[in-house]
Image (cartoon, rainbow, N blue to C red; front, top):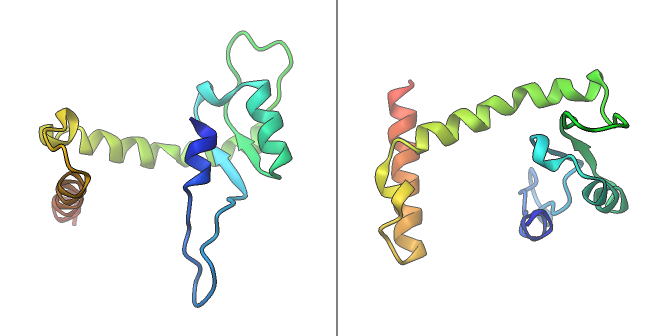
Length: 115
């Protein structure tokens, strides 16, 4: 699923120009620690930042790159806040437009709560 997700990335640039479709690095959890994924990302000139699994014989990450991994809690915390909205978790809506509207509404409520 990583490849299909990376194919849909479009990061807008400042000013004019095409959106950026190839990020410099991919930050993931221990599930992203696999040799085939590492080789595929190396072919795309992307850096993989993920902690090693416990049973890994050859370590592939050092402490310097894992400093970026520490900031991943912001994303995990946001997912946890979104989990409090049952309508998003259960997904009663069949249409993507309605689901996306409730997602944006939940993000607005989260932002207003934490001002």
